[in-house]
Length: 141
Image (cartoon, rainbow, N blue to C red; front, side):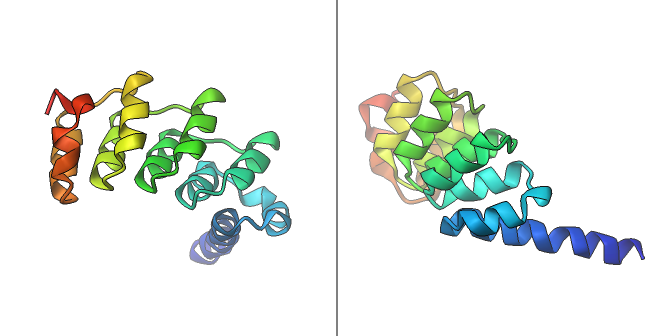
């Protein structure tokens, strides 16, 4: 029975994530009871700023994944809005931007105090984006 209850909880959460990624605010509202931080992260990953704003205006939680996934997708406007509105971030944000080759996102994040570590440089290499390692903002690589 516990497995059935878990499955019943996961399905609406998956639907909420899908709605966030597609910008379907009507469906988002329908699955509101299932929201967690992963729903904001799904909106950020898809570059759906309007969905993210909708979610946050209704109290949906977020975490560092929101910024990391926005950076991973190269969604600078989403990342900027999230940070302006208090979203947390950590080293994975810069690493995600580097791995995706999103130099503008990486520069903005670094210039605005996002921490990074050796994973930023290795992520750039892993993603085949050596130009990121040679960028002026990447002097620590």
